[in-house]
Length: 78
Image (cartoon, rainbow, N blue to C red):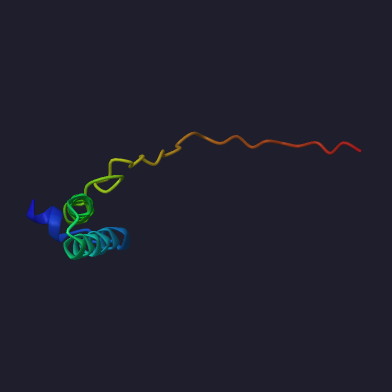
């Protein structure tokens, strides 16, 4: 868990944490519980690197094409 929190910090992850903290601050200043919950969700997604493709859930493996390629000969038609 410690590795998940402390490693792989990218710009989108940092933005989620910053946006979440801003939303939490706005919720506290306006005494709005719903905004505070949304801010906590955004902050949690950023800190724990979960959510849409955050933990590599959208990873697609690269196909290695080891097929022999044939030489195709073309004939010019005039």
